[in-house]
Length: 114
Length: 113
Image (cartoon, rainbow over the protein chains, first blue to last red):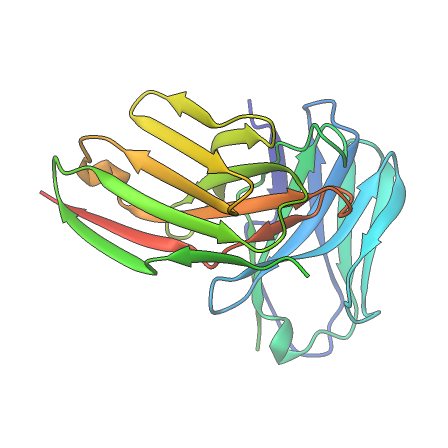
């Protein structure tokens, strides 16, 4: 039973399109995150939500908009896709954003913009 | 600003040898340090979590130590196997970072039969 699941696993799309990536966790965690892994394999945080409230918003273009309909879901919507958005996007969750922060990751969504 | 460094960037060992992976961080104000494994084209698997008050954690052939004052952690993998080939990432959670994981660039490990 997958703890953190993301869909789709692969996404190939043209420049200028709008796309969404969905994430769901069944761990009962309060906090969810989106990370981006670039071509050099470096992982950086993009957003974090705690109990559906945005708590971290790193310097990400406003074309990226996270949405958390409930504690178990955190979706990522990307408008007007650009070539530089090509990367692997990981969703993660943890019990809370404080001391109980063991993070569990989804399998990633490889986004390719052509 | 927290910076996490992993040395070496790549490591190749023959099967059966012990692996030693190093992680250093610049700000000791952390809640915990976590070691992950990433296989090519796959997600991250959590291996060990060490709370800031702990000195080490063990799971099977894996042992991770933490010296918070000197900003260092070491992951030991005993009696390596070809299946241990992967990229190993360490990440710290700062006390003022709202759960944000600060990752190192990883150490790519190849264990040859």
